[in-house]
Length: 193
Image (cartoon, rainbow, N blue to C red; front, side):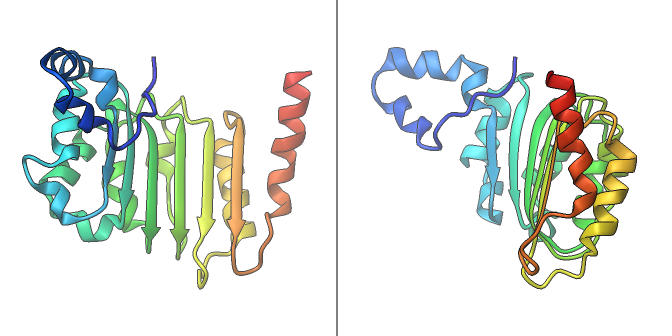
């Protein structure tokens, strides 16, 4: 099934004993949470690079901070090439659609959860929306965002409303959630009845 939410300190277990090390290194689901925060994660011996290999074909949970700064790194390109394995995608510090274009350009058939924090301008997720599994979206606008959250919410609902289980949009500047997402809450309630 899906990615395992393991603590980032999991690799410490590798030093306990040879048996635990062998077991951990041969269990792909333990390596499915990949966090990329800086260009240092591009080192061949970095945890994200090793986890990508050790996770083999298992579904991934990917966390990328500041994709624009990481775009020229090999680990970033490797993650983008593995979008077919990404089940959860969390991206922070998004200035433009260009920051997501690499991810959206690759098929993501099992992507079901998409989180964006600190979004500063409108983004186009049409490519990611082609994932028939996409059911949960959470987007938090940055403090000085230029996004018209109501228009953005309407676009998301028209694009994905039929398949979404959960849509959360938060505008930190105005501190509210747009009314156009309320129908999802009522349809979610009616589906569960």
